[in-house]
Length: 79
Image (cartoon, rainbow, N blue to C red; front, side, top):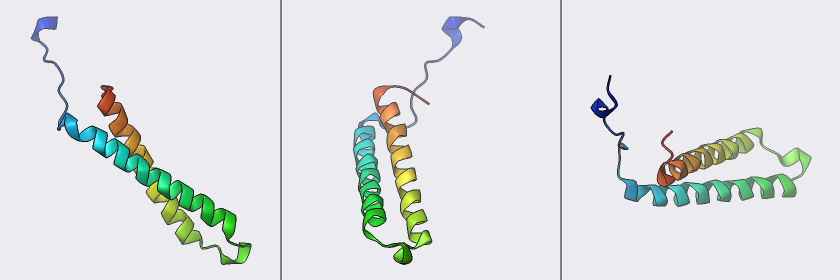
């Protein structure tokens, strides 16, 4: 296989959308991170709800992970 025969990889989407997705998802993730910290710091031991903590953690995890993914795609690191 010759090097000239291979095609250059192109991203499957619009590159102009990646900055907005990055900033939006990271902002959502940071908001939920702060909300989780305030939730942990202000409530007593008897008022904690495990399902609420897990839901906040899951939303934070997904939004920050996809935000970092779109950040990498935005700067040209195709993962």
